[in-house]
Length: 561
Image (cartoon, rainbow, N blue to C red; front, side, top):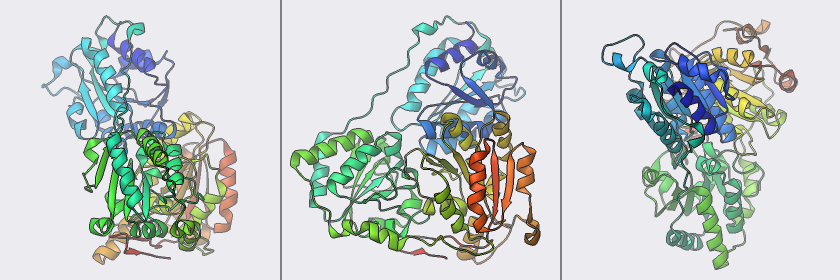
């Protein structure tokens, strides 16, 4: 059969059910066989949007999707999406078309070495130059994407290779089994020694716990040991908001006062599936002083990369957490909660940031209070970067894993909308809500076309202050100036018009849309959006220069109201 047909047959065998992409001349042979495949294709409006949609699909469901596009500028438009997925450990298969291999080195039309370009932003890349290698490369690609610390992979297919005939029997194809690394039981025992000696342990629930499907094992261990839990930004939703051991987030941006207080009062930190990223730790001297660290991660190179732990354990999170609980039970180490732990729910309420503003224009914090009230626990939220994203991390209440789907490590403006489309395709019975600023919205607003054409009823909440607001705040406090950060023009708040007019833009894509100027009107707007059954945009005009709490170290976060 043709290589192009074999590609589609292998995708089906590996469990791919959804593809997001844009056809083009250099990838049309594959599209010929996608046409009659059981893989459902959603046409994006920009290649970056296709990658983000495949990324969001995995975040919501734990199932891989395909992103596919043509050569040249189509392929290079994949780069930002690949980076976004890689830093957050999200696997997907990216396939790009390519000029015929006999033209390599001759600068033919739309020919670029995407396999080399994408090497630093993908887990692995290939350009197939021998048609017989195709099955082996695809088998390896799926294995690499799923194994260890997962991530995106890219396969570049020259046009002549796609048309080649090869000997291939679909029934003979088998994917490679994924083996999860098991913990060294000697180190598990050493970890329990450290835990028994500590007075104020704290556990960190990182995004790797959610990727491993280990939130239940994490909760069981924390409850058995009576240890407070901090969630990283990527771990948000790993523990219910009102759980007695929930210590919120630590960090210098999306952190919360309760999380930073509990972190500063700890003597032992048990980090599971986390990277100790800079937005979480802030000043490392402050973050590490006076406490020991146990770091559990599936990726060996993560251990010691940022913080040199007292004990590092390379393991799948679920297997390590299970082993730790078994070791604790074997030792009959089942301590009663300390006064610090018993007081945690009360302290959490005392330190909660204010959201119940009744100002006009609307205070941004009030928007998140109303979001928390309006949407059910199964709602999937996406967000990208900026103050809107930081407030979201600080203030949104998420009670279930795989329901909070942010661009964490990359902070990609434009990720939000297409990622929500992918999430909604993966989990069609759950609401999908984009939480985005007015700047971030316009980075990939064209993907409303994908939502409209395929009848994907996402909800877009625009927190619209007319600024590149995170950059405005950084300029103001770090450099004592403001320049080139205002986005509004011809604003007329009395007549409820600001430009760009996001309502008209959304309506131009076939979405329903409305503008909200008063906080009391938010609940009804959210209710209309949930009931609409079509893409729905709510442009919430908020106070322009509200600042967001953040700082350089977890003991010096500057609070704003």
